[in-house]
Image (cartoon, rainbow, N blue to C red):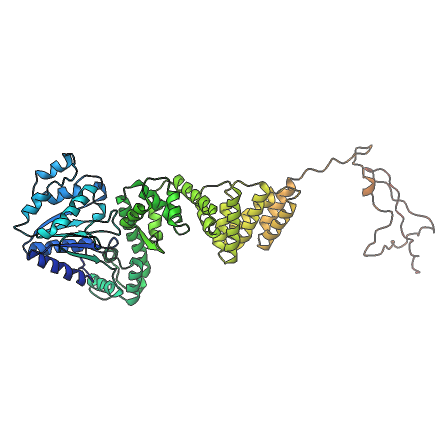
Amino acid sequence: MPPIELPLLERDRELAALSAVIGELGSGRPAVVTVTGEPGLGQNDLLRWAAAYATDAGLRVLGAHATPAEHEVRYGVVAQLLAEENRALAPRLFLTDEQPGGLPGLNGLLNAVRDQPTLLVVRDTQWLDPASLRWLEALARRLPRAPVALLTSTTGTALTRPEWSVGTPLTGLATTIELALPPLTPSGTATAVLRTFGAPGDPAFTEALAEATRGIPAVVHDVLDRFARAGHSPRADRIDPLRALTAEVVGDHATRALSDLRDPAAVDALRALAVCGDLLDFPLVCTLAGPHSVSESRLRAALAASGLTTLRDGHPRVQDAVVRARVLEEMPAADRAELYARAAGLAQRVAADDQGIADLLLLARPVGDPWALDTLRRGFTSALRGGRRDLAVAYLARALDEPLAAEDRARIEFQLASVEMVTAPAAAERRLGGLIRATRPGPGAGLRARATDLCLLGGDTRAARHALAGAIDSAPAAPEPRRGPTGAPAVPPEAEPPSTPRTHLVPHRPYAGTRPAPPGRTEEDPPRPTYPARPAPTTPPARPAPRP
């Protein structure tokens, strides 16, 4: 199945402006047109349309594409422009030493276009090499004397704002236009669904698509293409697969943009921004990124050109959670944990929000400072107060990774088990059983009793019984009893039975015919063979025998 082709949706204004520029170029009127917007809005699609339109109109078209890989290649874009006009000149551009004021091939191009109007198309000028940038700026200053139109596209904010941009002085009377592309409206998204499936989609489906893709035409096109290939239809009950597919497409676009970001300083700044950009302002993010010779303004421009960030409250921010995950998953796990730990330390030094610092510590390596444990425990209290038991459990579980004294560790374990009784009862029972078995007599005996009570309260009598049995088995053994002369254990005086008779539930009655003992006399029990003689207990006086 071939990929689905969508027209340029909601770009009528831009198409009309480009058509007018190309028509005036045929009459010898020069112009400079810049198409701007964040990645995926269709800048290069408009440039390809304009190149095809100018070719059909009989104009000469010279094109070039700036890439991050060639950002440091001198005259890389100029060589692409002049390759068709002078194939022998292009190789010499890379070999000739650059001279002050030298613009190789510029005069030859201006002489060649006098007889035939020419459209120069340069895509992604944010990646222009410095030599090509100077060359194109010199061309823009000479445009009023030549029938040439310069059509460029850029993403975000260019690293160095070119001289042909709107608001910069240009000598002469060349037409200067900047076309800023907006995202698709909900109506445009609905039109894309109609063109893809041949039938309108459910309103709920179209609304979810517009929200998940933010109206970026490239993302909308890829999502609809994959969605149709998977055999789905634009129904309201397919919103969950749509959102999952959109997250995958957004992540793929972010990965490609990240691979184009070659500046190490920009990569470090982007990673630091993904870690703590929502907690710290951009100057502190640059401090966290490490010492670099790149200025803050250039880092802002590089991040904006990548398309991975957006501006909120005047500061760059990573677009969404999907992009943040793709940025950080490229890092080794140890480096990522180290970056989170340094970010938490910096946030703690500038007195940032406790909850934000605790969130950073969740993914950081063990810090080993008391403030980390205090912050995590405060985060636990705040999360528990807000009803976020899952987050509270995560904070205390992370606190156990810090170096702790035995008593502090036992208290945190008990607190954690108290919350896990609701969220994860099986884990709480195991944790409480370990506390009962591990806690020694002394100051921790109260904690063991509380752990036993909590274990019983949760209904796990078996675990509590086994834990208590293990505690009894581990107790010191009783001393060996003393032996008497015959080898039998001697009964200590405190264990001897009292001299008073036991109180029986049924009073003693002698057998019939038994002669009662005389008053004042007692009957002696015969001594047991294995025990020494003991004082005979007194018995109560027997009742007289009944008359016959």
